[in-house]
Amino acid sequence: MERVKLNTGEALVPALRALYERSGYSRYKMSKFEEYDLYVRNKDFLVSDSVITFTDTNGRLMALKPDVTLSIVKNSKDTPGFAQKVYYQENVYRISKGTASFKEIEQVGLECMGDLDAYCIFEVLSLACESLRMISPDAVLDLSHLGIVSALLDDLSQPPEVNEQLLKCLGEKNPHELRRICAENGVVPEKTARLVALAETYGPPAQVLQALDALDPPMPDRAPLDALRTLVGWFDGTPYAGMLRLDFSVVSAMKYYNGVVFKGFVPGVPESILSGGQYDHLMKKLHRASGAIGFAMYLDLLERFDRCDPYDVDTVLLYDETADLNGLMAAVAGLQADGCAVSAQRTLPEKFRARRVLQYKDGEVIPVE
Amino acid sequence: MNDMLNVALPKGRLGEKAYAMMETAGFPCPAIKENNRKLIFENEAVGVRYFWVKPSDVAIYVERGAADVGIVGKDILLEYAPEVYELLDLQMGKCRMAVAAKEDFHDDRRRTLVVATKFTRIAQDYYASLGRDIDIIHLNGSIELAPILGLSDVIVDIVETGTTLRENHLIPIETIVPISARLIANKAAFKFKNEKIEAIVQSMAKQLEEKA
Figure 1: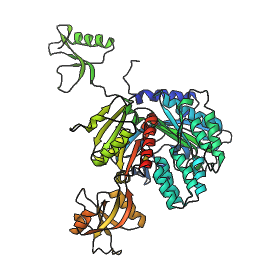
Figure 2: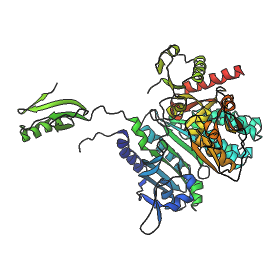
Figure 3: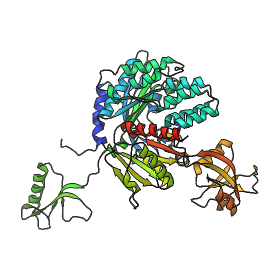
Figure 4: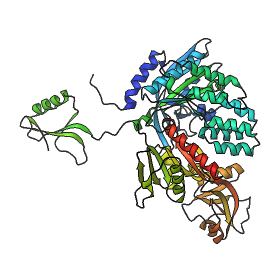
C-alpha cells in the first residue's frame, strides 16, 4: 500500500493499538451513546458536568459519551485471579474550556479491571510510559499516590469542604493559599509545613522520596509511601526509569480514585496528554468487588505537536484544453512515481500553495517560473 | 525543544516591578528598558524572552503554553480558573475584591440582589457560598455607575484605595477576597523547564523574605 502523509496523532494510533494488543489487551468497541442515567449517578467522575443528551425513539434519555471508562466498567465482571484487559479508540464529547462549546475528542486508552495485583499496576504504568515515548523520547510521567495525600489530609481532621480547598491548592502547587487555609482552620504549623512540602516537591523519585523521608513530623501513615517506593523501584533498570517524576499535584477525585494516579507530558504540548490512575472506589460504587487501573490519551492535543505544512500540495501540474489526456495522465503518473503528490490543474488559485509548479505542454513537463 | 524561558509580563507598573524581581533572579534583559513600542524582548545569553501582554490575558498565555511563566493578579485567576500552577504570592499589586454599594444601601433579603460586575464567576461563587439569590449584570467598565443609576443594588469590583468609590458616594460593604500578584507556570513547562522555574521561585521567595 502507498504511504499516506499522516500527522502525529494519526500515525500513533496503529502503533498504540499494536502495543496494547501485544500486551494482551483486546479492542473494546462501543456505541457512541449511553443512557444518561449512568452519568448522572457518577457525575463527579466526569471531567465536565455538561453532557449532550437526546431522547431515543423508546423515550429513554440518552447521552453522547463524555467518558469511556464508565461504560467499560459497567460491563465488567468479577473473576477471582483474573484481570480483564481492554483498550479502546473512541471519540468522546466534552465542553471545550476555551469556547464553552462541545468538542469531539479522540481518545485512545486502556483499562485493566479485576483481581489487580502488583504486576497489573506495573504493566499499565509501563504501557503508559511506552505510549508517551512513542511521541517523544523526552516525555515524562508524573506519579502520585492518593494514599499519601489522604493520610496527610486525614491527619488534619478538617471537614470535607476544607479538604476540598486544600486539594485544589495541592493541585495548583499553591503553597501560600495552603498556608492561609490551614491558618484559618487552626492547623498546627508543623502539619501545615508538611502539606506545603508535599505541594512544592517535584522531581525524580529518589530525590522526592528522600525529601519525604526527611519530613518532621514524619508522614502519619508510612504504608502508602512505602507502596510508592516499591512501585518506582520496579522501574529500576527499565527504559522508563528516567521518565518518572513524583508530583503530588496530580490529584484526582478521591471519591473514585485511590492508590497511584498519573499524568503524562510531552514537550511541545502545553497540558497533560495522558491521564490515568487506579479507581477501585469507582468499581465499588458500581458494585464490583475487584479493582481497576487505566489511562487515556487525548490525541486531539497532538495537533499542537505537528508543524503547519506550508504547502497544500507538493506539485501542481498545469495543463490547458489542448493537452493530450493520455499524455497528461502519463506525466502525472511519472511524477507520482518519483514520490510526489501531484495535483493536475488548469489554473492556480491565488492562495493555493504548491512546493513547485510545473506545466504540461506539447507532451513535455516544464518548470514554471 | 525551545530552551528559552518565555515570560508573560502584565503591561504597566506591576509588570515593571515583576521584571525587576526577575532581573534580580538572574534573568535580565536590558532591551526591555528601552523606550519603544516593541512587545517581545530577548536575552539569548541567559535564555529568557519577555513579552508584555494585557494583564487579563497573562493567564491565557501561560495556560496555553505561549508563555512558560507569568505574573498575574489573583482576581484573574479566580475569575478564569486557568489550569496553571500558582507558585508564589508576590505580595505586590495588593488590593481586594469587594462588594460596594451606595452609602444609604439597605440589603433587603426579601428581594433578589442585583449585582453588577466585571467578575461574574467571583460574584456568583461568593453569593452561592452565602446561599443568596442574585441577578448578575456583566459590565466591562465604569462599574460604579450601576448602583448610582439604579442598574444594580451592589457592585463587585476591585478596591485599591477606595477613592473612586468615595468620589461616587459608594462604600465597600464586604471584602470577598484579598488580591495580589501571583507567579504562575504552565503545567507542562514546569516539567520541561523545571530548573529555571524553580530557580525563579526560590530567588523571588528570597527577595520577598528580605523585603519583609
